Length: 172
Image 1: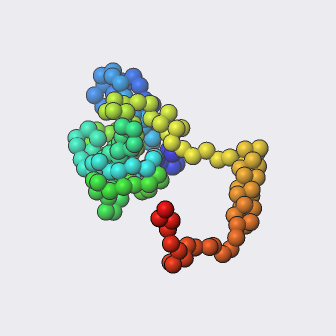
Image 2 (image 1 turned 30 degrees about the horizontal axis):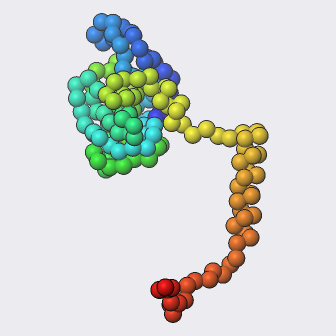
Image 3 (image 1 turned 45 degrees about the vertical axis):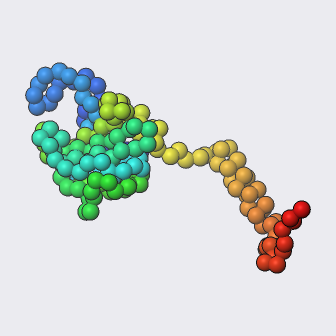
């Protein structure tokens, strides 16, 4: 899922001229411009690996996901209350708020995804981890399957036979 609502992409992943330093190099994430204080949410479930500050990223959070992926949420104005390294997070859980800490020209979320510590295109990760809604025939087929399972459960006996305590095992 996209970690921030009410956003626009202000700087995509890939080569660019750095807005502060001016040199041309690879941008390791995607920047979502949003007002200061806009809630930032976990793009996928995982475990918080880092909560803290450094000069470039400012206030940032790193979440570890299965398969060697990490997501980075940088330039935050604040962290979610009680957020700390080691705690599990669910997809959509509040991590902090958009800000402009560190090396930033204005309020935005720098969202970065790394696979085995190598930056990858974040929007592809979002597409792979966002649940898809069923529509049309897919939804109808799903509903038919659910109804079939419910019918099978309804047909099960309501009383269960259990083994008696005085039953003997065959010792032949």
